[in-house]
Amino acid sequence: MPQRHFLLFHEAMDDATAPATAPGDDLVLAPRLRERRRSAGLTLEAAAHRMGLSAAHLSRLESGLRQPSLPVLLGLARLYGTTVSDLLGESAAEPDPIVRAADMAPVPAGGWTYWRAGGTGRAMQALRVHVPARAQEALVRVHAGEEWLYVTHGALELTLGEQVHTLAAGDSAHFDSLVPHKLAAGTREGVDLLFVHTLMQSDTAGLCITPHQPADLRGGRS
Image (cartoon, rainbow, N blue to C red; front, side, top):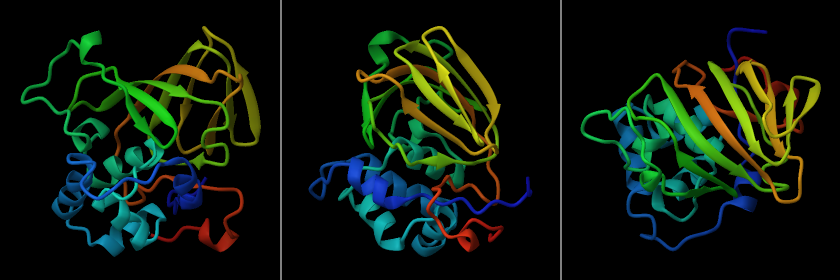
């Protein structure tokens, strides 16, 4: 697989699954997206290009007019050299090795719901995730790093490259994130996962492609 990957997000899927919000509804996430982008030295257009988003779409996320999906949050966190927890304003002054159940507030993101399950400021991020049926079905992700997941309830359809694997409760997977991968619920009630991924920055810290993107957009642009 080439070392350079131009990774695209299908923002039509994001618009379809992420609810519209009124300006100012998200008092933490939207301004932090803007602040972290500026701290990374990226213009709106440059960040959008690296993520495979339109500048208008990223602007809506930074204005609180749209809520980003969890995959987009992960991609923005990688691009800006931070974590999803930091973008959501959950970072503690000093890392705490213990995460209490009472502190695991559910966070909706693009049709998924996730709970922080690990400490902040680490090289890995741990999440508890619920993926409802039909959520983000067309989303294929490719990025640097590794992912590990464990199915706690329901069934997961995990696509790795050209292979589709069905995982039941108790099954797990550990794979290189540069392998194109897709997660979908295999049961009507959705699927619950424990999900751990490495936080690795790269020059291609974008996130997603879809099988319908033209071949020239999947190539090695930086």
